[in-house]
Length: 285
Image (cartoon, one colour):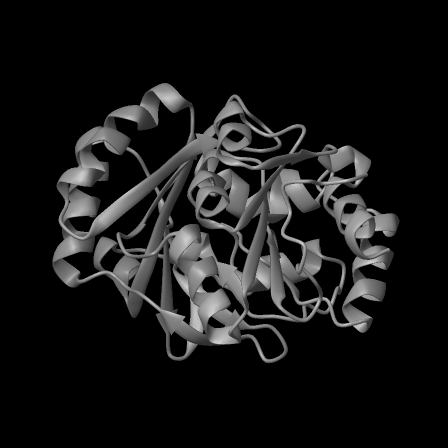
């Protein structure tokens, strides 16, 4: 398929390709297809610099990719961290100040909503929640993420914030979280992402992070670190809009939210049709 929007000198050596995971690289069952896996593996063996930008941590991204060895720096937690994929080492990142997480905690308490806290504690990434907590957020982590070595259950509220806090997350009905989303911009130095869950759109994620951490800033930082001429990004959801606009070539998959499609220069096939892999095959196959 011809893409007249693409620069004529776009090639494997001067570009970096960065894809969202859920709803973009993975299909609607939350899996990477054998076709996509094989295509990316073969293209990376030929020199394709390919990686991901995701709301997930690197630990939860790895199994979702079925062992696919990324060939470039990964952007995780919606831009909070840049990770070296071979070692899993965080090479760049941001965190909350104590004052910031105290204000966020007070906001959630005022609304009577439980949440999880991501932190680096004793050199390890941990996801902490109260032993008394119970809502869709906690079910997601204790059922869907069962056995995750990051999980840490604490009995007192102060222990939730042990270590270097960098992310606070909650999954609930959107009408319950919308009032909190409106309040977060009033907290100096923080921002929030609010979007439907890819697999259960009746629930929304509210994710709070340092204001300077975005998928846009993270992907542009990867481009800078690699010295790439072109940044090509793939996405589907609201948290991908900024990076699709900022990329030299933003590509939305057909199943993307309308806002993501509007931000992109190109709309590829859907995630269930291996849109990312087929786009890359069109270019380099």
